[in-house]
Length: 108
Image (tube, rainbow, N blue to C red; front, top):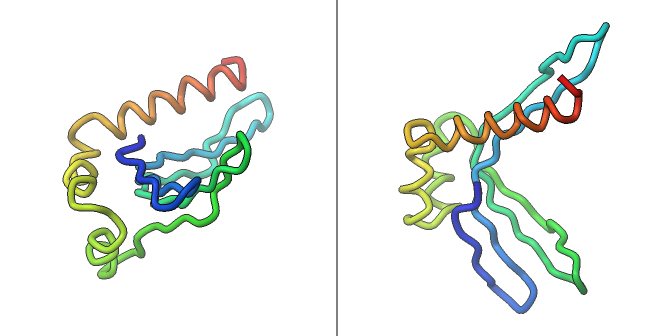
């Protein structure tokens, strides 16, 4: 989910988003969930010609650093929205989207 896109220089963008990711593999005809995460990201993206390239990405550190990093990485308006991802349906929708993509990819 993208919360905010800021152009910081000509053709350089900062994107604040929440990323839900899951990895799968197939074994003996079954689709196995290997790993996953649900985490906020700050991406720096450059546009060259008609293509976009991620130049950097940052995520908050674990544990006691998490709250401080969140305040450092994300604007207050984005933080307010991110603090609700588990109650406003954001994570649920992202998981549904992943499940749909998994079914299409593996034909299940």
